[in-house]
Image (cartoon, rainbow, N blue to C red):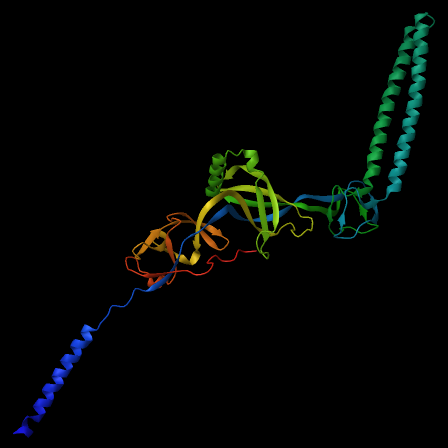
Length: 385
């Protein structure tokens, strides 16, 4: 009898043990702790707001050097591509011929002066004789005409002398300003200036140098609004500093100032043409370079900034995740500005004491609790040099 009931007893015991074990597991379940996230308050510091643009460099002066008189090129007095000072003779064009023409004109002027002197003396003599009725009035009229013709001939001779002097000066082609001269386009012994002025070379001034760029309509309005707030005049706006950097350079090492602002906005592009003037003593900037430009137009003492990684976006715009006093995650809509030394400027939507989630963003779900851990160390990225 006991042997037949043994399997039933073992089954009943196993069922009771399973039920007991299940009850123990249900009673010992504990909810997982809130996820840990790193938080940090916004960085608060003084910032400078900039207009950023891309532009290109251009020389402030560039002149084609031409032969303004006809003759054979006698000498080239510079090295191609070399810097020259204003007034330096660069080319010489057969000066002897024009020197002789000048001397000829000067001699003719001296002769005209002598003729006029004689004609004036004869006129005075004839005028005295007419008063004494020793000669007729017709004789005086002839003397007067001779004197007037002598005066006209002297004036013509003086003009011819000046023309000859100018042409003689053109035989030496000099640098009109300090600059760099291009390669020569003619050779010694070549006949130049035959039918029209012959281009000899080009001279370019590189120090200082222009930087041309365009500002969009929205930025123009921002600058004008800020200028009105600060009481700046149009002349003061045109004296704003500018900072320039080449595409291969870090930061904006070249400093200058605004030089020109167009009075009208281009309707086809919606931009305003602006020009800066930048010192270029080492000739690092060459005409035609594409450059990065920024113009500081506003300063703010207590701006709020957060790491760019802490900012998300959705159909509603940009946002950050903050942890409130109950350690619950909230999604906060923000208006963002440009980057400043690696951090993103927050225009509105944050307060200085907010705790912004900076790490563990995937674990931070709006409406749920988290375990906020204050970020250790300096979270501010190193500024760009």
